[in-house]
Amino acid sequence: MASRRQAQLAAQIQRSAAQALAGEVLSTLTTVTRSTISPDARHATVFLAGWQELKPDEQARVRGIIIEAVVRDSTAKYTPRIELVHDDALEHASRIQNLLRDDTAV
Image (cartoon, rainbow, N blue to C red; front, side, top):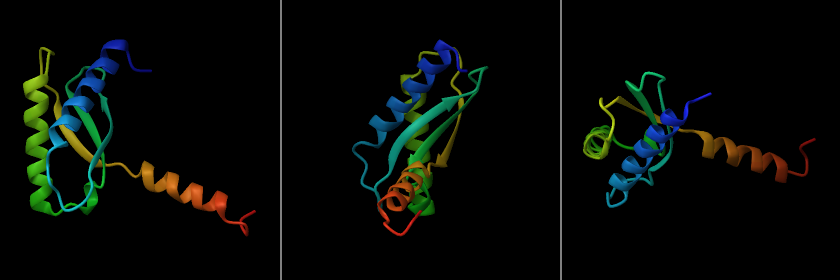
């Protein structure tokens, strides 16, 4: 289980990333869904819905925007190394919802 400090740092990173992307115009809807941070606070993972659909140049731009925002907003002694990954939780939830709605599924 994450410590209180880890949870706070993860929430701060998620907020910074989401606010940084709020005004960006991208080819697909990209949403920051959550973030996690390692116990030593040196590595953070930011999960994005829609990340895989972005073009490579857009991914590079988004990566730079998010890293810049996290560095700017950081209150920690060290800024963690940021990894951006696709979050398929929304697709997974949609598949489950479709299965539940399907009358033929048993």
